[in-house]
Length: 288
Image 1 (cartoon, one colour):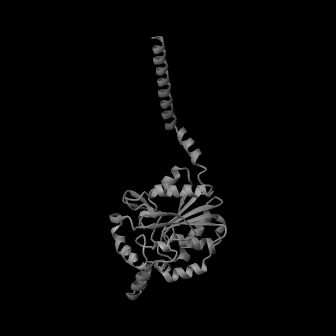
Image 2: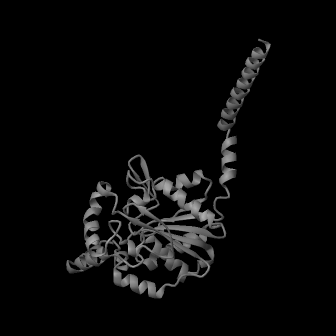
């Protein structure tokens, strides 16, 4: 009986201690202690900050009514929660690669750190490549990862620009102050010329993420379905706008089942923030 009583007393004391510890942890969490511990554990995830670069028609963030929307939806918040320093840039929509690259280079030069890791979506990857190669920021960039970037152009731009020229749309849009030169830069011919003239910087690690909508089935955005079908018959696998074969540059870090807009979080079937967390962890493994 005495043994049983001792066991009961010991169990009660152990339970009391556990409850006390739990309450203490809750109290410390509410006072930021656990947050500080978490940040100290993730602060070494990356050696350099991340710069997010948007595509040809993009933004850092916009407001619709009372709601704020980011181009990379939920990504910056997810990465900052891990302790990663994140910068989002805004460069001119529709402008040529050369113009957009100059704006990007100025953004990079203003960041008060040594080097950065650039993660660029769509045409933003071409802007980054141009800025690194031609505008003197190569020493500021540790890595460039492109996501869904048309390194070899896209046949959809070929069709779109030809139709636009036939109906005089380029002149009309230019007269209205709308720059569309960027769409010409992602035609297959211009992309070929670009690759001939823009060389990789030897001090920068280049990688890519290749997106395909082949297996997303009914989840593919309705607006992307005509382009997906056309490209599927013309070039094979694609993300609704860009052939997968055009998206490869440098090391293929990952291949994802996501259409062009899902890659940046504009869908319900693909968890973009989780994907970018995985990508950043991969960069961390590489010492970046």
